[in-house]
Image (cartoon, rainbow, N blue to C red; front, side, top):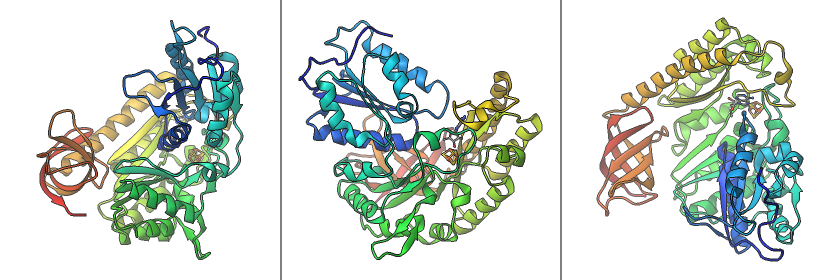
Length: 457
Ligand code: 5AD
Ligand code: SF4
């Protein structure tokens, strides 16, 4: 670890530029944006790409191994060979901050601030102290104070994340989230509708509603009637300029008939569902405390496909959960064969300190996990490629998200969340436009198409 000690700036001299480095999930991306907005409000500005920032916020993830180690090596890299004046001021935020705040303060003297995911609304106050030379940590977990204390949204992008629900009460035995993000809370309906309006006013055409258990969102609407996530989706869908709504990540046990029906009835709700199953063996699912079976999961997907026949499915898998036998792992492969995911994420089991699975018997050797992960990923890649191949010849709406590397090249997303590349003349395409593209070629991770028409909004 470097010899640099906090703070970088002489007491009283505040940093002028910042960079937020996000790790992990989309919820961290959302938090990172909001921290950026808070720092803007303090008179800082985002450091231009390629330039050093005066303040670096590491927005960390603790869900799998080595996240914490990566943070320490990042800190080392940022301060290595630098004088006290040249090194950035460093804040560690996110789930590693929550889980290992004290340890970070001890081990990394160059860190000025440690701020947990439920405490970052206090960043301006902490920054004020840090500038005076104090090292400050705040990992309090008040339920919902954060959102009310944040400044109004002002980001500009065709796609936006909106955290509607945070935390988790499910306590899957492998998972650290209930400990780092705390208990399940739903943000108030009216606040969310207002935030969605602001996001659309600043250019968003697609909103992805986020939560660790997003489909567990519930609360009273403006008239006091109880609503589930489908009620919130229906309300947000009324915003005229908003064209697409997505949500992630769901838990199989929190689906309601209303939410399934919304997929058939709300045109703006996109035909893509990220629904983790984790394993195909009921014994393993029980040991994971998932509270659902493989069969129950498959039946739910069937209902989803009935509501929306073109639904693209995505999931998460863990291989090598303690005690997982070869035969049990093969049940996971069978489930993948049955579902034919459009896309899926798979991970080697990683023992998380403090979780029940970390001390279970029969931890699986790393070579076995490596082998299983490779076999699982081969099937997932096969299906992802087949899904992309099957879109060749189809014409679909594409929401333009960014320019490509070459002049005239653009990148957008299909309704099924595929990345779609295409070319257009300057007057034919702009960020945030919805265009129709005929898919002509498919690759493993994206498809290429030909612009057919621009769609009036
Ligand atoms: N080890 C491996 N993967 C994990 N995940 C969560 N906890 C662990 C762990 N301890 C995976 C799950 C979850 C995704 C976000 O990360 O698949 O759905
Ligand atoms: Fe973790 Fe399970 Fe909660 Fe998902 S549902 S955040 S895997 S405890």
